Length: 233
Image 1 (tube, rainbow, N blue to C red):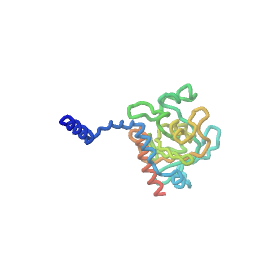
Image 2: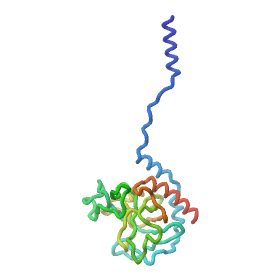
Image 3: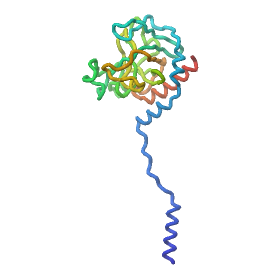
């Protein structure tokens, strides 16, 4: 009887003892940034409604590509500048599987702005937009736009937050990184990818993601600035 009582008591204690569950694996940085990006709730339709009209801030107009008409102005409203154009694919910066000298005949291993560690940006991983080089048409620096400035890029019903990451030709506008295109459902291939129209680029003046290579920082700041922009306009 004594043995049986001890056995029953031990079994009861085991049932009452707290169960230790294996610790959940912490989310990776990529998972965390992806969750942050999905948390945004400013709709594409709301942003497009806010930029329906255009008050030009550029002194002239840009081409979308060589040989096309110069008919794209840079517009401005309180807190932002914006334009509506095509999207060409920028694959410059750190070489990778999709962006390198073999996949892109115009590939350059440098970008106008660099990461916080001094390395070039990665077009494959970082959503960024390209601004035209300063000229008599428009100088982005005079409008609170610089490397790391946060942008909202809209295509159809999708919004992707990005940063200013590179500088392009002085007379052409409408270009973004491989990662930006991919996030918007646009074919990102630098050879024949992109889209000929239907992309809106909104750059929030005097903003800046820190560090420039952080998708999470761009998404968090972009969502806040986009919400304020829609509310004001």
